[in-house]
Length: 296
Image 1: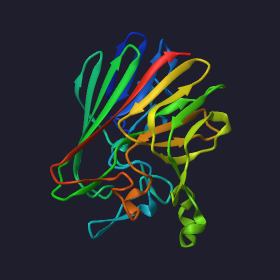
Image 2 (image 1 turned 90 degrees about the vertical axis):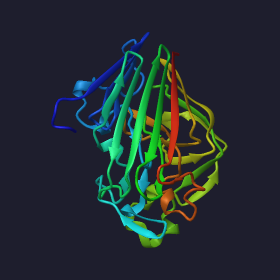
Image 3 (image 1 turned 180 degrees about the vertical axis):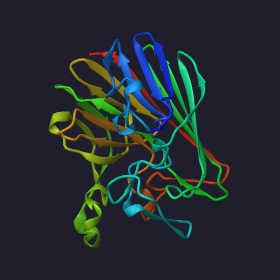
């Protein structure tokens, strides 16, 4: 968190209200429909930690990089810790202040420029556009490589949905990535349970959240993810074709995260085959997600 005054942007259209905290990772503090939380929501001035936000961007990678090390184009890199675990997590942009470039009642543009440091060795610039309509929130990420070298890039978001009594999710999928510590016995002390090791068929996911205990990346996401409960009916769509689904049983939230690549893809035998973008110097890439909101 920034020690200075919070940088708050609020958008309102119809019954939807969106609150952003630019200084707190370019995050969504809250999204409400007529005062009802659509995502896990906190009034923006009260948001003390980005980990309590409603959603934050995942740039330049999503989920974990195993043991904070990776190789790229013949060079080895080791990253500084950014969490309590043995891996780095969710990129760098969610832990940095963003600038507000534009704002109106229906649209906001935030930007962050990263200079090579111990947390990520490549320089990049990313912009995040929020567009609000009376029943829709659309968010776009556009990243540019401002380094002299090609860089690995992943994009995504980490939205937290309110877990209610009848929360249910439906996604059309093709595969699930499972962790298997037995496949990497030499790394059992490295939290391997959260690193994917094998891809197995999964034609879809349609279940009550209360029955699930997931922290997995899924391939082949097509169509809308339907997220419903006794109060709301939501449709989550994205240009991205992978999703991380996280359903902790002891929390008042769950997550369906649009992401571009498999967790720890940079350390796989085929990083680009697992969705990581090899972004040339001067190149750019973008992605979007959209959340349609209605009463149940």
